[in-house]
Image: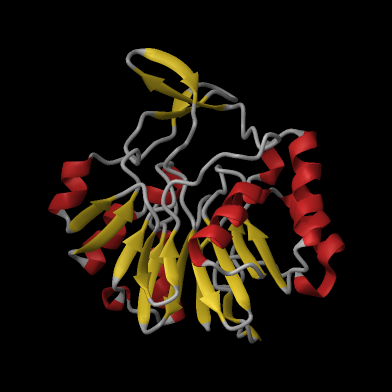
Amino acid sequence: MVKITVLSENTSGSIGLIGEWGLSMVVECSGKKILFDTGMHGQMVANADFLGIDLRSLDALVLSHGHCDHTGGMRAFLGRRGRLPVYAHPDLFALHYVSLPRERYAGVPFCQKELESLGADFLFGREPREIASGLWVSGEVPRGTPFETGDSRLICFRNASKEPDPLADDMSLYCTTEDGLVIILGCAHAGLVNITRHARQVTGVERVYGIIGGTHLGAVSDAQREATLDFLKQLNLQFLAANHCTGLPVIARLATLFGSSFHFAPAGTCYTLPIGEES
């Protein structure tokens, strides 16, 4: 089983919790407690206190990618937690930018040395890693699906030149349960189809029980969105909780398409899978 608690998301699921653009979740699996991303401004610390989650008990931090709405809470989190391993892709600190509505830096808002001084022991890697029994950090996801072209607004700077951002640092978590795979997404910049196929290859588990997190389907082309929805419908998902960058119109559509299998996942939501919703 895997337990997932949403600490920070665009919306709040309860009075007393704070919503902010971004995503942060606690994943409990095989006796380990992993923080997956830290949100935008560190409100995940106050939300953890409200939910009775002791951040000092966490075993590791996994960063899905180097955008500020997933890494901006690191200073606040490390100030509470102190030293711990931080799993990330080598391109975490790349010069990530967004072009619209105006060109601006969207990458990690802190330098690596500052975060290390606060206790971040970075473990950079491109390959999949099993960090607890049945819990995998995806590593770099191969981009093999032609229609998954991503968000054209995202750019990066390399050698003083501007180019589309490949976001090679986009990573997810893969959990194996007796009922199948649970895939935990940050923003799914690598493409939801690519991520799912990679999860099956890495874990050796074909059946996908559930998916939770940001799908970024609201910001891609109509063609990519429709093809991805067709793919999701073929998975026979028992659980789907799309939030954050999915976008409200797409979330509403997913709720219609997947019925009782779909769940809203604002800050404060907690699920134990494959059993069902806990609170």
